[in-house]
Image (cartoon, rainbow, N blue to C red; front, side, top):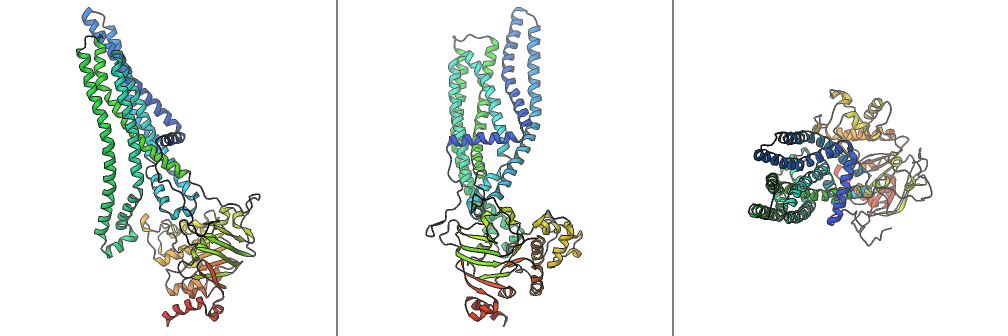
Length: 613
């Protein structure tokens, strides 16, 4: 149990930076993960990349022997056969290099498509397994943004970056072998410069990703300012209040603040890389001059030829390796963020008695639902939203919960539905502790219409049937649920229940009241034990509201029903009313009983009644 005097700890989201070695280990983890997704194209891609990497140094040495053969033929009128032989080998090598270059993009495309799809799937599958408490914090959305933002790019690209290192490393080794033959000290200088460049590149990539991670919230906020101007639900108010310039200014400032910070970091890394690259160029020029004028170097014309190629050509693979390693440095930051998100603890309600197996929700509900000394505090808050709450909802009873905003009504509903779990105390259904009930069976025992219900931009039939998609004879059941709540609007729809609704997907739009009727139909469509309605008629006109509640008791026959009501006229239809304040029940009884007592409910009812006199 949490100490009430201490804020409840918030879920842990990674905001600090990992060390270079840990990020490197996470990079290896991501590489192994993407290789499992599409092993066949990955292995073929790796094989073709290896072929490409070997062809260049082989062609380099073939060139050496070809030049020597030509010189020997000219000097001593030797045979043309060696020249033709080496020329044939060289052309074959160039053909293989070009052929592999054509195949590579196709293999990489196949791999990247499969790997990107799988990484996206892993993130999407993970999110519903997390505790809903984590959805209450900006850290979750920052981490989700980093994990989701580049699943189709950063993850698959990691193999391409590794292959780039392998390809160019082979070229570097081939050129290095030539330098070793000419003079070992030249090779040692190249190796030293390459090592420094590799460290700067890897570290620089990690630094760039660290900046991107810190900017996640700013970039999300900038996106939100932009969305206000283009989103259908907010564009009207933005136009009415003439927010265009304000929103553009806010978006522009956040964009350029983030862009300039990232640019400064990139310039800092680039200056270090260009410094080492510049030194490498000067060293190459010095090596060429030394070999050209030094009398101590004795080599064949062919060796001189490939030496000049090696000195001038070694800079390209060196640069490409450094570039790939910088990208791998960024990828290691992405890998760390993705791994941390996938390792977040998943929601699992602790059992009240670990020695017992989980039990189903009682069907039918015979006695009712009881809350015993339930306390719940939102993470990061010092004040409990519910404090030692005790109440009972009898089976088949229609109960209304009323109270001021912040009194704990919605929090109790979240705990009742099993979406959150109490910090202390227990909720029991027919004496069975919620913690002993299989979570998905608990969810399936409830139907709910939330105040912020979802408008699914799907067909009308799907909108209604999503609450119980495995139902047999679905079309007939959908029609019955729609008729019950007045959501049968198929006469005005061209394709009946198959008509797409919601303008964002190209369907027709409904009025607020029609959308709410569809949400009500979705709740009644599920054959659940308990109905929970949070302001179920808030968007309906008075006549439609009256029609809905005249049938409410009929529709809820055989079910236990709980209503959160702000308009107290609705509460009169309940068998019993619970009045919440400060996270606990302060009054309960029928409408008439509570009016006679003259307590808080009577004051609330009287204050609302004045508007209708």
